[in-house]
Length: 212
Image (cartoon, rainbow, N blue to C red):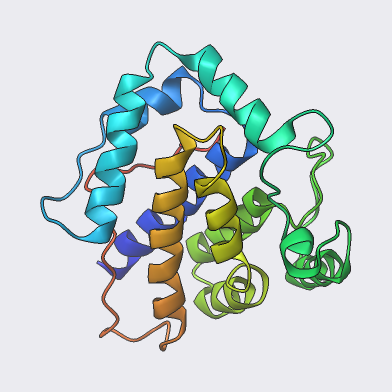
């Protein structure tokens, strides 16, 4: 049961990483549109339902979602949101938080892929590292990485994305992201190996293989 929960958590991190790294393609939209959320009125269940509904409404609007992503994350010179830890923690890019992430990645034995152009403090890169650590069963390392490199700034990133003028599809993405990270923050404030820790992420059929 714990292994299944951890696989699900890892998959959600990869899903969020994929959505923040580039606009969703047809396969991800179809995947999201067919999600089966748990019944109920929990914050997580509502977030999954809103994202799934938005995906269904945009199954034939891939190009418009690409434009939305462009406006939000890239823009002319700079997008409406900045997905980098350094910017949210210091107000500038390529600052101390990036150096600290690079140092910790080196300690963990992770190397940057030649195909990746973004700095390592991009929210997608951080999510991917946490996903890999969880999948490897390294909960203590995942907890440390989350608490040090994601917990201090995800709330600011969520507010920026949720309030961005171009955010439509990405508004429920931002809501799901915040609610999932809130759950993770509570989990990582507890003993990561405690069998008493309750994980409530309210989705039934999230599967692996969702990253692009």
